[in-house]
Length: 152
Length: 152
DNA sequence: TCCGCAGCCGAACTAAATTCGGTGACGACC
DNA sequence: GGTCGTCACCGAATTTAGTTCGGCTGCGGA
Image 1 (tube, chains in turn orange, purple, cyan, brown):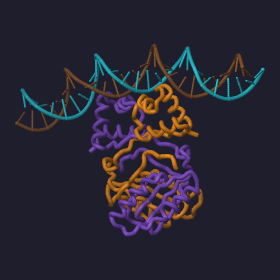
Image 2 (tube, protein in one colour):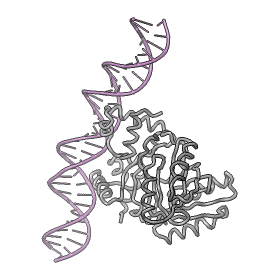
Image 3 (cartoon, protein in one colour):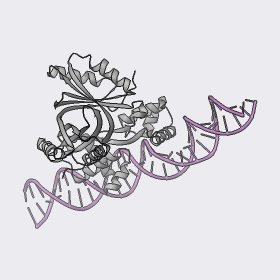
Image 4 (spheres, rainbow over the protein chains, first blue to last red):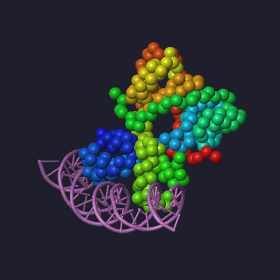
């Protein structure tokens, strides 16, 4: 699907999405015009979905992060879709995973402080009739990869 | 900490990190030179930590995603640090959360297929002596916010 | 009031993005 | 085996953006 050149371009843009096209062209050994066209095609094909700044959450007054594993019942499509949608709209919510296995949903939440987290759990989550249970884990550290090397 | 102008710039860069400085300046109503200086300061202060392309995982031959909640013992700093480090180096691992609460670690894993996930769990995780248990949830959908609106 | 500082602006210069016509390699088809 | 069409790439030319820096302005302190 992706040739070696595409992979190299993707890797460079994962590392630093704001480096210039010329820089990427230079590092990959192709002409800037070619590089530009490759990147355009990668976006068009949906390989590159966007470019986003990575912001320090503490600077946004979100010093507390947690992961909340929730179970909802009944586990019908209507309930799942509605729950995902409405939870996703809450400002404390960073990310919603719809899963199968040990939980139905995993919700990444960020608040200014522990009180805010407690308020979220009590006022936003526990009051929902479809939520039959949830477990909360406070995040101490988070290691995230920006690039994904190919599997051996 | 951040004034209104900084917040606006951050928001725009979260939405699209590759739009031009001039564009950001125009949207925020300031001069390009001012905007450039603001962005430079935001990076210097650590508010902006980087810019990364968001890549479609299926295009990278990673059609399967899962979240694995793991318990390790003993829960000493040495064991935690070593586990985080070595798990984070595995190519299947996208992200490692170090948590307290219902689990010790939450590991986001991505593989080409279900066999790859099974191999990861059996060959990489279960064989570790410090791992006393884990639960796996397959990810069906993932909703992620690129921007974070201020809390009411 | 006056001074100093900080932040912003705009002009000038440098560098990058973008467009587009040309070129060569490759494969299909006679 | 030759010819034609296609595709990807390149490089020059043009448009646009990044970057630097001197000066202006408004504000707070003396």
